[in-house]
Amino acid sequence: MRFIRKPCLLPILACLSAATAQAAPDIAAPTLQAWGTGNVQALGFAPDHQRLAVSKRDGVLLLDAEGKTLSHVAGAFASLDSRPMGDQVLVASHDEKKQQVALFSLDPRSHEWQAPVYLPPRDYAVNGVCLYRDEASNVYLFTVGEEGKGEQWLVAADRKRLAEPRLVRSLPLPPNAEFCQVDDAGQQLFVNEEKVGWWVYPAHAEADASRVPVALIEPFGEVKKAAGAMALVPGGMLGLDPKAAHLHLYQQHGNGWSPVARLALDTFKEPEHLAVRQTPQGLQVLVQDDSNQQVFQGLLNWQPTPARAPAPLPVIKPVVQTEPVVSQGDAADDPAIWVNPQNPALSRVLGTNKKNGLEVYDLQGKRLQHLEVGRLNNVDVRPGFTLGERTVDLAVATNRDHNSLSVFSIDPATGEVRAVGEVPTPVKDIYGFCLFKAPGGELYSFANDKDGTFVQHRLSARGDQVHGELVRQFKVQTQPEGCVADDRQQRLFVGEEDVAVWAVDARPDQPVTLTRVIGVGDQVQDDIEGLALYQTAKQSYLVISSQGNDSYVVLDAAPPYAVRGAFRVGVNADAGIDGTSETDGLDVTSANLGGPFAQGMLVVQDGRKRMPEQSQNYKYIPWAEVAKTLKLP
Image (cartoon, rainbow, N blue to C red; front, side):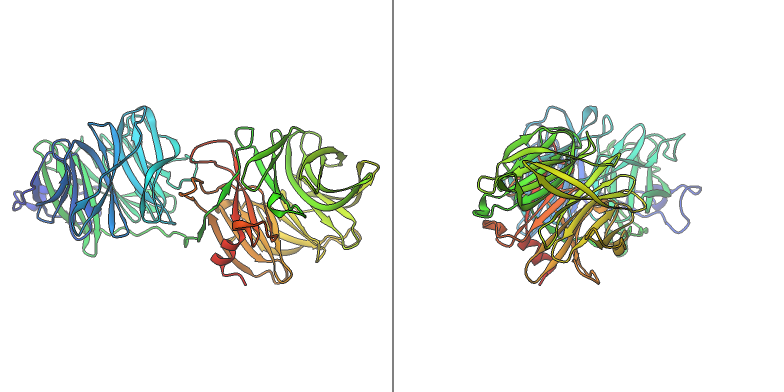
């Protein structure tokens, strides 16, 4: 197929005119020239002033600025999107004959196409596709289809197409959605619902499936008849009402959108397809009139204001993930790392299942034990506890069924975990927890209540049972959870979820004076969740789970508590491991556990298990990557 560029056939205001009552006075109606004709199902822009098009008759086409076909892939295709990928362009479309989504790599200089990679056949009709590149340059594909079905797939990483795309998650989308577009910088997915309006969803793979409207059809909004194709630029959206022949312009303001102008396509009978590219002079627009298969191009003198986005945080890849916990829903919570004193490679990760008990994993993420002892919330471990005639390592967790402390022994030789009893507490709604071992060897526990109360117990053995003696009690003003004790400095760090991390003397005979370590703000966003200490002979760092922005903040564990940096845990495409989000608890060790964990290991709970979607689990991150990323000494 050849697109033939023609001179403008219509007067300027007849090609595209602004409805005077709805258009902003400084947005002039552009001159739309008749650019070409063709049986086109979708349009797009490519590098070096090139264009992309797909057709059910002529396949996938690369065109020059004059409409001449530079190269093509034969077939029947509908829907189109593209993203730069190194020196290539990744092109996505739907193969109508195969009924599968195809992913092409295009060299825009040589005009050569590589053989496509196909998504597996789906159990629904795919109406539209769009691509999304995240802050780590992973590329995802969204599908929208019949009956509200949609999916997100990981299709490229490290500037390469994946040989086998990975399904990340399913999405509940509007019924009969046909079009989607993604704002990469804003991490926003836009989807149309023809008879209702345009919606925006979070696009990040670890985000939830919430949505807000961009614009609605009358009488609830300003759109006259239908919400059709859309095109995006940073901070702005162009939406096409094909039945009223209107083009709507929208500007983002915070989390909301406001109409800027409504432009009437006076001479168009069936405007259907839309593409846009931002230039210094304004927005370059392509619009097709389906009634005569005529494509028009023009320049719109509107430059939306890009939405302010926080600076992207560095992303670190996990190298191991555990098997999912045995319970569905919000179940996994807090991990603790037990280091095998004789063979660190045989160390264990203990993870609470707050619906069912305690999970025990090896360093490969395989579940070795599941102990059904009740709804456990937070867990911590300390070595060298005399229990009866044995010396064991101890794990203790808060039990929300009984408002007690569930106690476990860990065999130092085998790593086997056994439930050995409970310690009652006076709190009414037990929640967070940590242990503290004093220089003299005394073992203390700190448990908190959702009302802010902390209770400190001295733990000791009576025969083969663990006994707890209440030695101190204090309170913060609002709900806490995470805490961790620095045994060397005899300092306790506590997290007040919506307020701050505080430091307090861990010794029971000392006054309770709370010192602010870091408050909720730009670096830490509520909820403050897990706290852990990475300690060597020279360094001591506090690691915080900043749940509000799915990140992890590292700071010095001594005054003045200087912040060293923050990072996120992202997808590891090669290993098939998703990133993390909504993290509750975490733990870290500096012990040499071998392999990638020679400098220690960070374990974080993942609140949304993706790729595939399963029950929650835990991710293992080499501390060496944290130190390298944050340039830690």
